[in-house]
Image 1 (tube, rainbow over the protein chains, first blue to last red):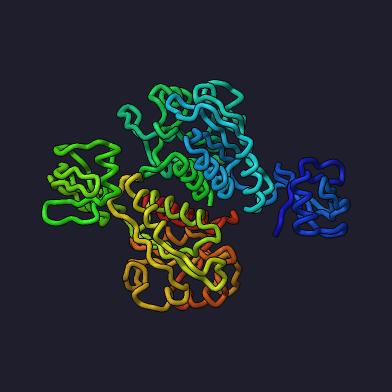
Image 2: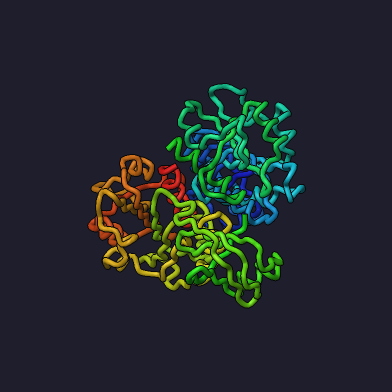
Length: 248
Length: 248
């Protein structure tokens, strides 16, 4: 099954940009009348017929629509500090998208070695991984934000949900804090009956105690990811897998 | 914490090769008398004192030993078909090593696009990931073997164990087989009380029906990894994570 992405859906038409169109018309040599599966990136799969086959910009006519196609039973926001080596973070974006994530927030922490992050490449990787893993919803890759402002400003409350038993907010850090013992992410998830989860993963140098304290003040639960010492990008994917398996 | 790898341990001496010695003496500028943590790659951590500081080959004197340091409560063999893009397979080797794996068997399947695989680079990556993730046991990366001979020849029975309730043998393939419905790897693991697990992951084109049938004849249980369509290397890491969380 091959998926195409429509940057715009208007009336009964899905519009493919030049990149998708070139792939569709030049590489796969589709012709008018061919049946195509098109996603809008927001959760809907459209079964279409190619109406305008132009490598610069093709159009497809919608025959039927499947809203919530291959929808997950949960919503996951991963806040993760970009790694010094950009490839590692982009690898995490690809893998988390394959496994399942709704929103990725590049966090700049007190101890982040990378203070500047441009999300454009990661967004292209997320689009490609979404199509490859047969999903209709492309995870949102937000602009980078500091850990402090993510924790403080209401708009950055994950998926705009209220703190409630419906949503779980976790922060994974490595240092021991006697007054706030960490439980495993698996154990914490097992007691959770909602469907909205946020997990924060720190930079190579971990979160600062101040950031951890602010998270706890904001209702975040401290967790660990098991006994293995994981790289930042591995920890972030492991968190996505923990949520994936919890809802499996 | 920094770990060094000793290619040989004899009497009360750990021997570091040129690469480890250069890193120890030239890069980290360790001097005789410095205390070092050295692993033998087979599960033991040695607390040592640097006795001979030579970039070509250093020696450390063993002060104490911790056999089974950071040992996992399970033994995992992952048989996985190398991907067409070698980087993806090597990425899997690094991540599976971080999360936890004992043996990686590069499998050549009927539908493998890559029929030849040289494990040397992957072995170096496994060593580096073992040290980075603070483990004393370096996963064995075997020479490549065909799916058929892995399933058929006794020496390749995972971890040389007998089929028993102590060991679980799983094969993850994507096609539906009405006579052998697949359960999720999570569900199958939940019913397992042993500690030795083998999971087989096919190539981009999946296992052939003949390979799947042979696996089932040999006591393998067919599983799926959830609803996401995962790339080969993502599926292999996801299998490692499933076992990691089961024993967490």
